[in-house]
Length: 289
Image (tube, rainbow, N blue to C red):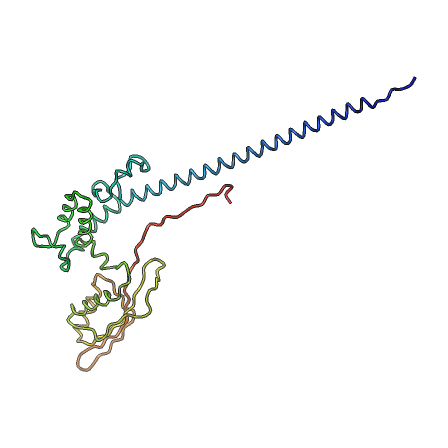
């Protein structure tokens, strides 16, 4: 008996294997694409979440800054909303509405400090109250601010508080910029208040260094004087009690037979550049790279 060829059966098996391979390949491609889509979606969700977290942190940081300085009254929630920021006018904010802030501490503890204001500002005519013909008291300056109605009047009242209250003592004690002329005039006044004049008084070239690692800078001066012992003693006392700090670094004292003293020395004064809020940019990249 002759056996029939099996070619047709083998062809059918080959076709079935091809279909199976194609089906498996298609499923693998579909699965791979699905996994890639899922991973991409996860990365996008993670990136969006990082952006939202960073935005929330920025909003909280800005709100805390506004609240701590006392620019606006405290927000109803954790952060300021748009309506609260739109309604806020810093010059119209009263001290009583921003307690325990930088603004309230400055105005309540420094501007009204009687010891700091014990020496009136006689060089500024704007500090004279036309009603009393005397220097404004802090209470009068505060009333002037509270009674001001227009924005310009508020700004003018704030200017009076800065220049006529005890706040003016701060830039006198620690200026906000380098001013050698004012420094020499200040120490010359100390000499004159002590009943003498300097033999020489000049700035030193070794200036503008910040030895403390912050925005506190030094200005060096050289001085010499020849006077009696009482005057020298008075001068040193006045330098010690001056509201502006003069640090005597070196001093050479020579006694003369006529009971006079020659004093030569080098002193250091200080100034601090203004501090400012710094806004930084933060870049967030997908994948954290």
